[in-house]
Image (cartoon, rainbow, N blue to C red; front, side, top):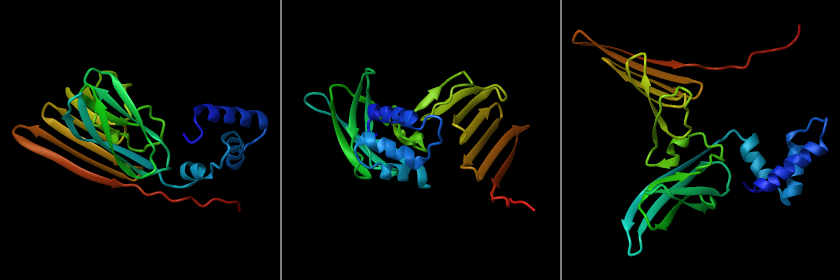
Length: 229
């Protein structure tokens, strides 16, 4: 985003030509890209490649109100972590038309006002999924729900509602982090938090009685000792 797509692609091509049949490390790639950009990219490389942190963008429609010429929509946007760089805010109007505006991202949060001819149906931050946001579920206001039959459907920024053949019911899921199943006489939920935490719940109605289970699993990792003897 700091270079722009065109100069970034030129920089990658230059890196490929300069280091053809050679091994290029991160610092060498950065220096080639800096030649094309014309300024230091150390901040971006440090933020996205070498630091342990991530980024989480959020958007929320604060208010909608009619005006003399159309409608005014106030949107609150925020960034937790990541780098200072511009990001696109997209409004989907009631007709399906879209309006886009760029937020500079200099501050960690901002309140933006949009003037449109139509009512705003939805606000989305980073609609093209260009930034490495680790939680895209809060990138839409209101929260997006998607229904699908195909098992291969996997939205990055929405709850997915699908038929569940095993229970003859429905499942509600988000990526591999959450799954809730509601069927005939049964309900279950599984929640994953990173690699370490897994929680589950299930309840079954049978012959007028409710039988349930609740569990939690913590998985820890350690680096194995290696060497020669």
